[in-house]
Length: 442
Image: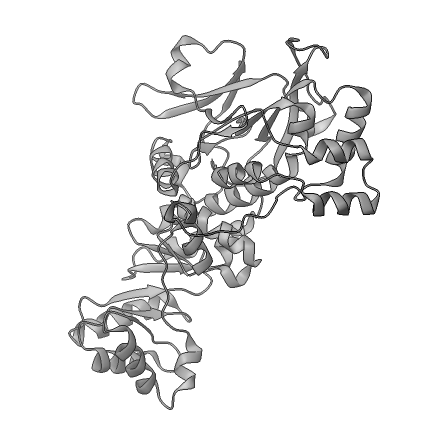
């Protein structure tokens, strides 16, 4: 669910300038040459996963659908392009009427992907599809990177809840997208209210060290917070002396204190000491929340610690070292002529090295072994083999310019849990490795 589903007003700005200039200059040249209306097929894929990663996570699909719907060139945008002399008048006139009228297929949000997976396929005229390249890539590359990091952290955390709290570590708009992607990848809540407002993600937050330092004593700070938020609140206990703070917290809130948060120091050692102290004070149900620059490896190292929840910021919103997925947007087929109904011709870049691509409009399916576990990502052109017909991955997202694939965010979240569970067990290892599934081309 997003904010539109709640019936709340949301300003939706045009996404038309979330693009690179060369997309519009290509459009102008194609209009002049008479090739702009040729039917074309573009595909989004990555040639390789980030180093050491075993699977990718598709995220941002819903945001792509919003961006395509709002890709409009109003008078202000056209005036900017005209003033800069970027485009000629016929091209500006064409853009003034721009609406995407083609089809988009893609892996549903939350699904996993591998090198060569056609994560998204955009079909339409060259003119209407080429201008969407940058906005689609910027969304998918960012959101999928965050979701992949979130997924690894969710695996490391097991059944313990994860809180996204990285808004202050990235661009304010990227923070909202990151919180959304983290939720798809397995996080439970966010501290970012804009993300909660826009996407209906559960929000959390109590106090920082500044609140403790504001008061004349730690006891005064705890008392003010408990009086305001109730004994079920979470008290931050590492501003001064942890043991003394825990003792004071239980005295103020009673044994029904909701949780204590530890944000510094040797988290493994401190968590054990705090758990013992809480139990001795009768606060056996009080939970322990840890924060402090966590990543999937730090979370895994705390698996044996008496920790009940994790808060993650910097490493999450930066993709835990991989802030992009290196997805590309390539023309893979185009009409074999300018006339309507001309057959498609496969096209592909054939440069030296790792930047070559495979031409043709592709389908994708995931083959399972006898135990129902995924064993290969199969990508092909032409007819889909009968044995793979019910294992196809691409679903319709846009038909004739109308969005048909929008869904609640929880559907993507649930899908990811199912997709990840269907991979070989080695997919969830945090050690570096190759993609857990090979990609086979037919």
